[in-house]
Image 1 (cartoon, rainbow, N blue to C red):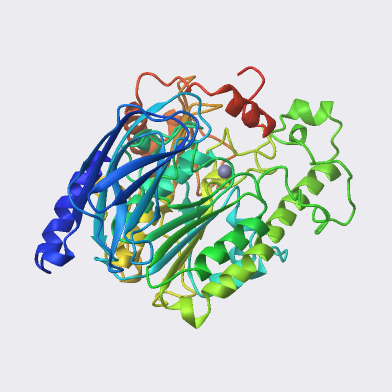
Image 2: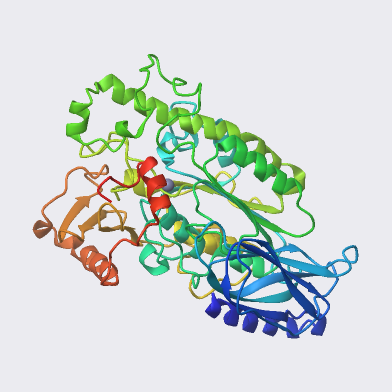
Length: 546
Ligand SMILES: [Zn+2]
């Protein structure tokens, strides 16, 4: 984050000097506190500042350095930069004539125990000073496989809303995630980095020094928002740069409702919005009344709870599951897709109206897929697999100018390519930490040729994988074993061949090992807080041995 702030102020001041003094970002205030606990508000008026204590312990060791009074003009906005520390810092009231120029900034340490240090800067930046004022909506549908969507050729009518959207978008048939876990994959999506590089390995928090898409956009004057499941924003640090936040276990109906509110409140200020839907995730089709949507015969109770997921062959036997039960669980998976698709309808319709269509970039994807019955060692799972059933994700990109509408690309692309695509569409430079490529290049006629894509799994199993159009190489780091698949003969990745017999794949294995070798020596899982551990166990993410 600090590196980002330095870089950004250099970039911004260079660009604004040409446009005159008034368009330059200006540092207003530096804040430091040794201990923040609970909720406080920093109130700034002219060159005076005070802290209002709203909850729990007052803060200690406060040092506020005011360099300029917050400007009262709708052409500038106040943004938080160079933040360091755990509490969330949000501008809750910008200075206006109506409030007599009073700026209020919320400092929220959330539900953690104990105090934390905090420092940040407040800057005034010109509204959408750089880049085209295009709104951005990113929708991630957790655990969604592309091949169970109509627009990817599925026979069942699971996805009428997404199919209609896909007709207006560019559809990618070889898009892959970077991981099989929810938080690390999302962190790759928003930092444009591989998992071992951004450091959100399993369920820990994204390190503060990582630069997210929301931070880049907020710093350029975009309003940023997210409505997500789990605690991705607070506990997993994916809220970096996000001002408007909704999170926790909720159905798609609620999340889409909140998103519509956010979109309809939008003003001249461009916005970035991320939605994370959890309705396709196990237990599948759990919304009351939806489980039997695609089933001829209902199997009451089957697939309701965690003990019907992550099934090893022995579990199938001991739990007395018949082939009909397993087919019914797949039916339930499809029902979850149909539910999420139905709920997305109103939002996609709103974004297709003339008011939004030509000024909104919409990206729909998933954090990972789901292995159903493909791999007999475990049914209905994603966490410990990097096979394509889990690695391959849907990716639909609708550009505001309609570029490539209805086209299909089979280029190898990754979730790390999404954030650079957003910035390129908005005409903004990507920070140097962003490792992906802009997909916009493909709309301008570029062809990427062969490219290796990498994936990692840091929990359950320690795995690293690399794939090309021809080969899939999977390294088990805990056991030092390698499995190689020839995708031309074995596209489902079921029959590993003897590595000694295939020299052609040797180059990919070398690259994979170089990729895996950059992993830090200490691969121990981060310590989990007891309450978080309890919730993860309830959701079936953590076994009882942890
Ligand atoms: Zn997930």
